[in-house]
Image 1 (tube, rainbow, N blue to C red):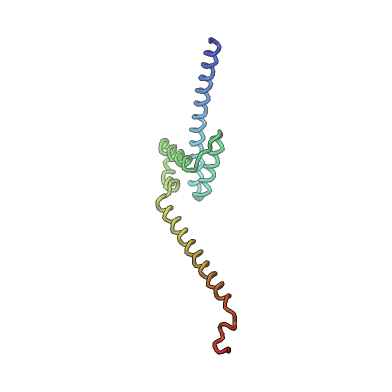
Image 2 (cartoon, one colour):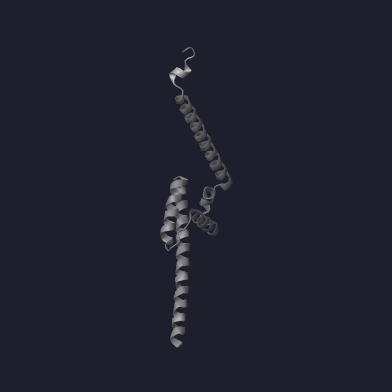
Length: 146
């Protein structure tokens, strides 16, 4: 019974220690990810390359079984920039690119799908029309062939 209690306390302590080190590494990763993103943007790089560099770093540092989604990484960068406003004051103007208008994106995707569907429908109608024209021979189309 005493051994079981000691093992239980040891596992609990180990779990808490692991959780604390994991959390601090996450904070460091998001902080450095924000630094990467902001410095690259401030140096004149475009949004895409800056975002990919920061996101790759955050994913790499996170480790573990579950990976960081792009939405989570963007939120971490935003939180870091807002939390450390004095340090990243030049970066606030770039945050709007991290969180694009989702409604607008959905509408653009719907419009794109609608156009693709219309193009497929036109193509199918044209194909059916060509197939129906192939059914008629030259003799059938001649008016005065008796």
